[in-house]
Length: 312
Image (tube, rainbow, N blue to C red; front, top):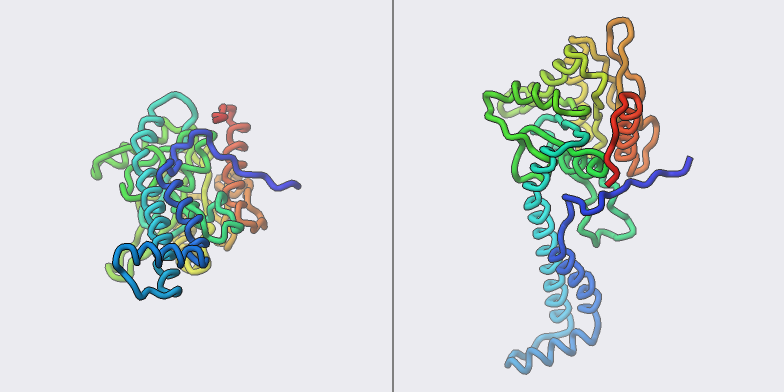
């Protein structure tokens, strides 16, 4: 089968903006120029006119490389801030009519797990404002924004995310139940971590949410994510998933064993147990497979449940 390309939304709410792109472009152009004799001659002449002498070719190239690096770092910082500044737009959009996805995950996962960015090209050799990996919040929000508006409950304001539902800590269960009713479908990443310092479990709230989805029979319109993460994070991801798998079995949901390519799962009920109906990843291992699987799962849910998707 031909490989499917991941589509970006026109006028994306995750765009980096003009200034970051301009600064990064200057860095890309300046970096090779700083290695040429033209640069060393020009810099030496400029410094002499300012009364500074004695700089050699190697020092000139170091100065040029440092300037290029500075522009690149400034562009990357502004790109992140530009995405964060559009949080108000993403928050406003989930109040509009149209299909909505509710994304649920334990907050600790935002720092522990990263998903492969399908928009990153290895041909860029690292010279890109596109990160190689994205945190779960940004990944789900950006991959799904051409099709649905993604909403989340709370979360760290330092992380780029979909539209947020702000709720007091002591009312999060009520806010969650209301959000489930508002949502066209749910995407959940059930992970049960462990903090060796405090000796406490992490992610128990997400397991409670998963249990609610099963017992309220909303699991039939839920996509479960088994994360595909970089190799150095894989052991922790496997352990966190296996703890969640054992917990889910206690309330009638059969999650598969962890696999390194991850999984995008829809469920069906058989003999009173919810089991895997389809995994949209399978044995696929290419970089974009996780994003492609998520989009295909959403399209499958839309076809099954008869709801329309955006085309933007």
